[in-house]
Image (cartoon, rainbow, N blue to C red; front, side, top):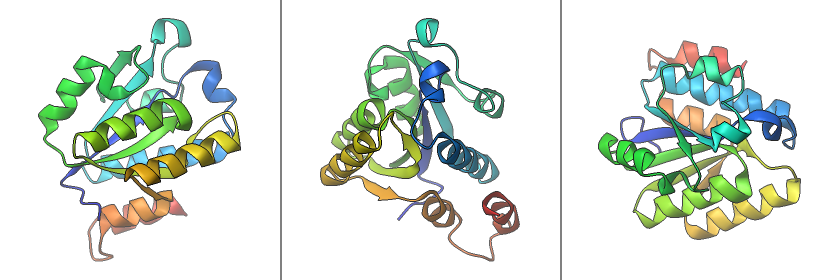
Length: 179
């Protein structure tokens, strides 16, 4: 089960024109936004990446503004773990769990999930907060991540798992995110 004291949210490569052509982009964006706001509400650390930002551009709005205080790591490796500065920062947080959101499901999200699993990290993929250009690539990658040991959940399951109890003072803030 997710535990907000043991988890980091990893926001992967939401940049440029590639982001604009993602399958079901509106749903993707809404759910990534909810997860970012929930993480901020619950003081869950967030790390972000940008794939070759000098070519693909910076993180797109509104996420760039939402993540203005978040460490963002440029990378050429498809896996976030292939970027040494990201890996150092991730290790320094000493977290046992990671929630993955971003693009593309079948490339950077998939490779990051597998690398984290190999390190013994529990990986949770918010299935409706990741995307690729085609629905088939999303489906196949989600299944491959599940087969590798990742837990594949909808955004709302992740949100409520982080909260755990309706008595939590953050419950009202969370309700505002999902309505």
